[in-house]
Length: 99
Image 1 (cartoon, rainbow, N blue to C red):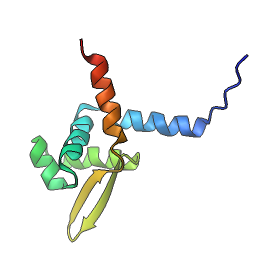
Image 2 (image 1 turned 135 degrees about the vertical axis):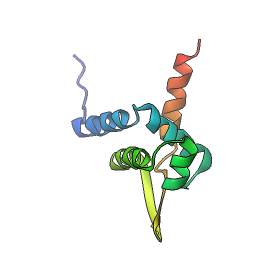
Image 3 (image 1 turned 90 degrees about the horizontal axis):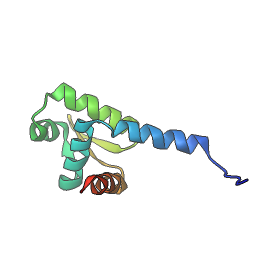
Image 4 (image 1 turned 90 degrees about the vertical axis):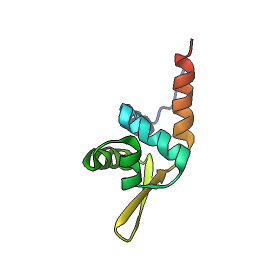
């Protein structure tokens, strides 16, 4: 019998991040930030042609799961990826879908 030391807290954190990125609009936000770096909420919703409230909703979910970080400068909030590892995960998934 194999005895694995599984840290259920780490597994739950990983599952939460995967759930957070499992929406097409959130994937689009991650890809946009990966390409452009740090962007304001305005830059994000205009680039993706979505409503400001929709962008804020998805950004809050991603930030809440520690996928994104934010910084307030004056009245604007700027977002960026906490780590580019998340884009590597998405690239891996995309490679698995190639025929």
